[in-house]
Length: 337
Image (cartoon, rainbow, N blue to C red; front, top):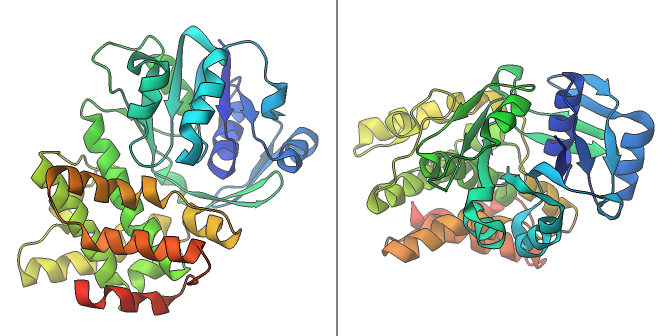
């Protein structure tokens, strides 16, 4: 069985290092030639909450050959149609693409390769690229979990294989209500990644600061409410029921929810959103696939999402150079809370 991680950046490099360290066979593919060269010559260096160096098999896309039974897709979503079309000839006849991307990417990928050849996976941990071959794990070692599921009613022959590979890094839950799992991760990304990018800070700083926490709370509430309006049941994250903990309908529960927010994110407090990392590098972000997905679903069912709309607008203005990531951007939310 041949397996590859396509888009082995910070998350993919760490996942590949863990799998290889545990005895698994997996290839790491990235377009960044300097990163690939460092991986080839010095191995994958994992720093942060866990530290080790592991020899890995790494290459650029142009060096790929043959077909793969499992392709872990870990690129950004902006060019998914182009990337998945490129990968399709490399996918074995009964092979599967496992998307570990943010947002709700399974539908588009399924249109290209067939929904029965797609598995979705949400990642409950974060990482940052430090330099070529060096990635920082920013989440606690006991939070390295995955949720795995399918959008197809047909059983996938590689589900057990994918689960076994991911378990070389951490626990894996196979979810029947995978769309609910996707939304629980989307809620976290829209709230914490969105504000990390808007403010230029870590998840912990966005949650802990009394000025920004009300906006984080409003984003969480908006995601919960749009799911309720659309009949989507949000799944727990690492055993914690987000809705039960953070939803509110009165001032007392709202105060309790606010108090819980920094506690709920403490294992990932050091995490800096990949969207913020992109902004710092002058790149476009995935905001349209994260907060924008919440807005798009709200429009579809006729439910307003003004706070997520505001995040999307601010981040696009940062991308264009009109604004910079800063706590000053909180002023744009003043009339929405």
